[in-house]
Image (cartoon, rainbow, N blue to C red; front, side):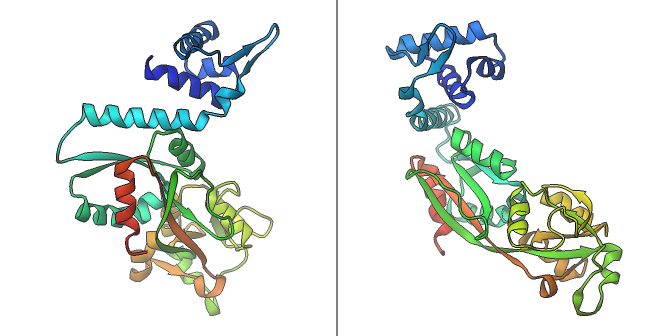
Length: 296
């Protein structure tokens, strides 16, 4: 059996339909069905309940999806270890939110280098939903993300470790010419252009749930740009195109230099935690988790 067979089965479980699964694998449905039949022949058990007018996935396969994901992850890690073996080096894949990649990961990498000098990183950046998918699919063995009390922590199974790297805050800031339009007590006009997050993005959910102004599109906000990418939000705010919310760790140097003005004293700040998740079955991930959370 090839690893491709397990990938086929996983796609079938994710799509729940032979036609859609075949399309994702870029082959015809009959060819995909033959590959699933080959997996059944190897397994000695049918994983599809074939009826006259429909095909259903067996409950036995569905109930073992987690084990299949874990097996794929372990096989890929083994293949990487053998193919790229170097006694002095190892590589770990991490899915990370775009904001965390820019704001907190550099400091985390420095600590890791001090304790695990031979370790190399392969980062897979994306929005939170994509990062979780990559982590659960076994593409990465660790997940780095922001969490807020107003949204709550992610929920994983018992094999997944959770640790806290540190604390951060979302704060409202202005830059460029907007710095000179701040009124008494650090306020800006209600019609000030804003760089906001979509409500379905993580920071959008945090700001919406907490009722923060200038956070998401709405009748009381003059949105200039809507984007889920914090690095883009930072550049737009620095250019003076609007007020917006950013993690303090991402912009502390700009705030210190005066390129950005914090309005947290007026509009508040939203507490965040930098959370790290690791597959406990991956030894490198477990070691790195200990390094990153040893002081917390």
